Amino acid sequence: MQITSSPLPQVHLHLFGAATPAGTALMELVLTKPRAWLLFGYSRNPSKQEVLMHRADFHDPESFYPQGDPSFCECAVWISFGPIWLLAPFLEQLAVNHPERLRGIRGLIACSSSSVITKRFAANKFDRQLRANLYAAEHQMISTCRRLQIPLRILRPTLIYGQVGPYGDRNLSRLLVQLRRLPLLPLPAETGLRQPIHASQLAAVTFQLAKQLITDGWDPNLPECIGVGGDSELSYTAMIRALQRSLPQDDQARCCRLLPVPNRLFFLFAAFLLLLSPKAFEAVLRMGADLSGFTPAHQLLDEPPQPFPIQPVTR
Image 1 (cartoon, rainbow, N blue to C red):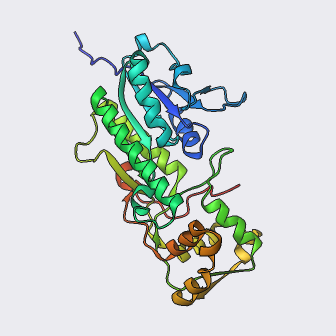
Image 2: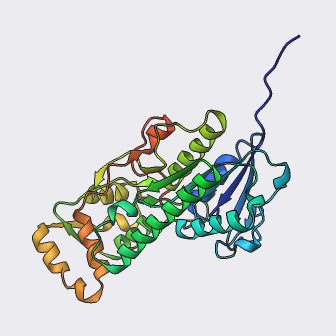
Image 3: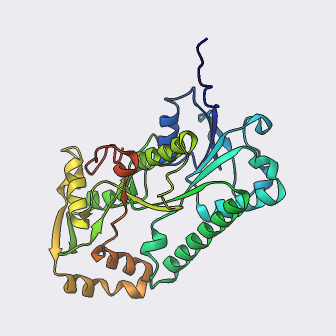
């Protein structure tokens, strides 16, 4: 008699922040594997057209009920691209008041930000508060998951870019708006390194971690908090030039000339921003800082590296 191994149980994948570029990319990825993964997408304000999305508001944990039947769910993975400073207390309140709603969770993957590292010594109040919120949320997540014995991985992505479905980023897309408006863009002559990651890459890394958890368990060599970036490290100026070259010939952003200005002179001219917006001044200062050195996405995916930029960048 032939003996066959029992198939893996169907995994209930609960995706929070589905109405984001990375969330949409993950939904598209998971839907190519319908037999193994039963997908439940959540958003604070799902539209009627998004039939796979359900409502979940991190501000209102009392009203949240996992889709499907938790009493029969033996294998569930939660993934979140929503704000981790809201996810952490949301999870804690569920654990305290409604532990039955966490039944069957085999692991949780949450998206934080590399800002918890890069803005550690920020001078302006806004960035310091952002970093403090991220840091506190990460530690609350770690504490809650350890108490519940739920395996946890926190991703700290660097600069996220790219268009996925109707959703675009708020990073390079804003830069493209300026490039299309300006005939000339002054930049420091020497700019720091960047490691931009496309939303689809971030989704692929997240899904790869989920698959590893279900099949073999997570790599014990990976830390709970993983800094992840794209496959290319390039200067801020080189990033903009590569972005321009990737656009259609008739895109106005290609016409904007980049003007290198000696660093001391550039930052001297930018000093007036201190009177208007310390946050904006510090953002300008970061043009000269290296914000790279994170684990490239291709290493976590065990795939060849992809050059920057990955398409689509924008509509």
